[in-house]
Length: 150
Image (cartoon, rainbow, N blue to C red; front, top):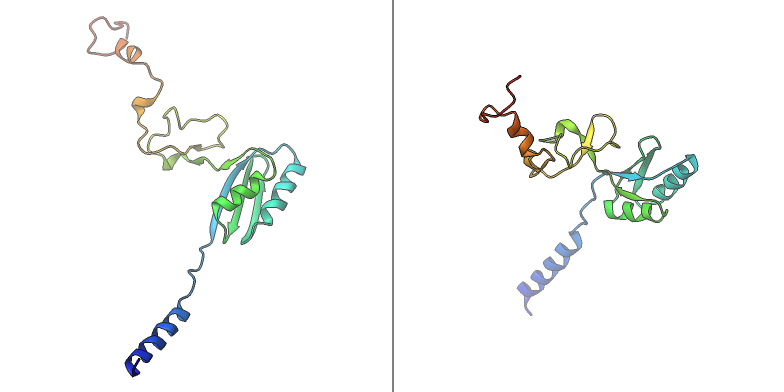
């Protein structure tokens, strides 16, 4: 094995020791959880606080929302929340200013908090709404039989 081979072996050995694990980023995971009372909220908060890496847990009973902040993964937080036997999903709402078409049928939700709509893909267009073409054509200027009262 010669001197060069020995130096190469030691160099490879030292370089493998110096490799560090990638540090996790602090994340905020928001969940929509069906909670009926303060007892449910306490139970959810206790379970989510037990998730490894969770730094803070906020539970909003009125909005049915739980927010976990820390070095956590969304899948693990979701799994922990599902262990409470409550209906759980990732927070589906975003401010309506962030959605291209906030009035698309898929985005509107009566249960959404004020000034929020459901998160929909950017491919959702206004043509996918429930507007019927015969009503839009009924009052069109191109239609000679359109309503002439207007």
